[in-house]
Length: 200
Image (tube, rainbow, N blue to C red):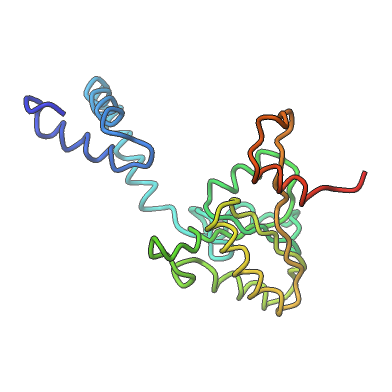
């Protein structure tokens, strides 16, 4: 921001810039927008931030974010408790739930194994996943980590830990998007599409 900007505005901009995907220009726009809001709306916004941070915690079963002891999915008796879908973050659960097709449970890792960034297996919620499987009742664990180097490495690592526990470990199929044209697909996408082809 410019040197003539008020210090509190600069500080507010810097706080917004700490958010993922927010650069300094976007942060400055947000800060200026806050200044144009009614004081009551600013107070409500600030209270919502504090309230979320103070009341939301991890589900004791799946590590999803919730304000109850169990998240609504784990607490739903109609869900299939024999299938657990392993995801990187809570926002991945929202993506699956939008499909309305998946009826099993989830487990959130809160990251992926990435030695280059200093993220090791002990930094993730792997131990609680293994404890869930050891308790019994789970027949299939679906690896739904992203198709990246870190996602594949994490899925492979978990598979090695889970298979000796007697559960089926599967991986999401990856390939061509619906409506996509072959000529625009990259080599990795085409390879995965071939590798994950199905019987007709």
